[in-house]
Each structure stands twice: as structure tokens, then as C-alpha cells.
Image (cartoon, rainbow, N blue to C red; front, side, top):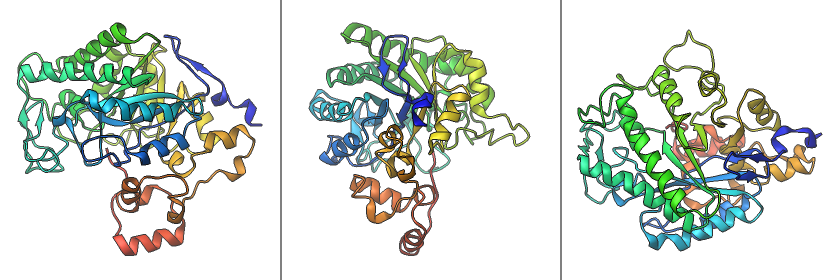
Length: 391
């Protein structure tokens, strides 16, 4: 029976924040904010429909105007965004979920077009493989310090907006990962160097976020950190580098760690002879110092239960909660047989998917969304088959 599932039991972080269950909504980029990063009514509806899981990690919000990575992106770069963000936090809270805002700077993973003519910036002036013509400029030391302060200011705004935490986005090749990567970080100052020196930026961001949280939060407030275990660049981040990063993060003042993977069971993409899952390697290094959120191809109650049995503290879902916003309620009601694992594109309005997200699902995410067979064929004919999820 569903009542025996361990993921239905409450979970308490060491700082006292308690979740009603151990299912997390992973951050999903809805691309549905207004042009300036203001929250839209579509986004509020989207998150309200998915309240009920233990914790909702609201999609990335840029901490400054130069950190914008894509159109339709949330912003937490100014106090004027607080009222809209408060609406999002209230929507998440509507059925008991805790609300965490993911904060980031895109770094070089953007374009002059998105930045309205400004040149992207990064750790070093090294172009990304995906867009070799978009060479960023290297941040000055003073600008690095300002970005660190921007992460702190964004965290204060999240507190004022009523969120229960922030997740520092150090994954998916955004700025924090760019500072850790030997491909994008070729600096010779204190922000670059060997694998340990390339962690200095992440350490400084965590220190600043924790400082402002301790000074401004009148209630327990979570600080999480998300990371990607590997990157395909050469030179690039390898799992050995990430295990050193994880060891460092496990001793930092963060409340949880969160791997960014398309499949939580995935082993190394770069060493096919090593079949041990990346999450298993990571959990061994963490050694119970921090709770780990696992994400990637968790769809059914059995999948969520398996993640916890394998050592994760919390199981996160992204795509499945797009298809089935009432997933947790159906499990709690012993109504698992009605969980939607396949989505008809004609039901996207029904499940509250914003227009920007619908467009993305019909193109870039088509292969990963389990659309009904006939409708998938129709969309492939109409839009052409595109790549699936990517970091």
C-alpha cells in the first residue's frame, strides 16, 4: 500500500525545515516570465497546480541583468521583482510544499542577442563549444566580487518574497560551473589554477549567501547547491574533479546537495568501462555529511522508493510532474493506476503548462516527454525531430 512508502514520510533538515514528504519538484525552465523577468500569471498557475510535493525548486532566476541566459527567464536582480516572486512562493505554499528559489548567473551560456547587444562574460575569454563565435570577455576581479555580492542580494530578496530557501545553481555549464571547469577557467589569479583553486568562486558564493541568510532570515532557511558531475569539453570536468568538489561542498554551510542528471542511475559518459553510477560515487564521498537530492528518470512510486533505498535523502521529479501535477495526491489516495505517464499535447493546457514551456516541449524536449504516439508523430512531421534534454 502507498502508506508504506518511505517517500511519503516527512523529512527534516538539520536546520529545522521540515518537508511533508520526500518528493521534490526539480527546477523546470518554463520560459514564461515577462520580457524583463517579471513573474507571469501562467507561472503562478503552473506552480500552484504542483504544490503538494515536499519541496518545489522554482526555476532559475538571474541575479543580475548580465546573468540572463534565455528569454522568458525569471529575475531576482532587483527589489521590484519581489511582489511577483511572492506570488510564486505563495502558490507553492498553497498545498503545503516548501518553496526554494534557484539562483544563477548564466555566464557565457547566453548571447549578445539575449543580452541586448552586451558581450557575455565568463571566468575567461574562452568560447563555448556550442557557440564558438560567441567569445565572452573575462570578468575582472572587481566584477567577480560584485557577482558574489549579487548572489547574496538575490538571497535576501528570496527571503523577503517568502521563500523557504535558495538553491545555488552550479550546474548545467552556467557561471559557477564555468569557474570550476578547466576549459572555461584559465585564470591565473586567486579565482583560477588547479582543481582546488577553481573551487574558490563557489566557496565565496556559498559564504556570502550563508552570511546574508544568517543576517536576514527570521526563520529556518535552506541553502542548497546543484552541480553537474561531468562535462564533455576537453579539457573539462571529470568525475574525479567532481568528487573533490563534493568533498569540499560537504564541509560547507549548505543544507543539501543536488546532482543534475538526466538519469539518476547513469554511470560515466567518459569512461564506459566504469559502470558504477555517478550518484553512488558521490554518496560515498558525502559520507552522510549532507543530504543528497537525486533526479533523473524518476517517474513511478517504485522509482522514487528505489532512489531513497540507494541512499538519496530526497527524490526529485521534473518531466513526470509536467505530465502529472497531481502525482503525490494520487499516490497518497492509493490511486496510482490513474497517474499520467504519457502526455497528449492536447492536454498541455489541462495540466497547466505555460505557453513558453509548451513550445519548448513540442521541439527541443520532444523525445524526452513521453508524448502519446500518434501526437508525437504529428509533431515530428510538423516541427522536425530535435535533440532531447541537454545541460
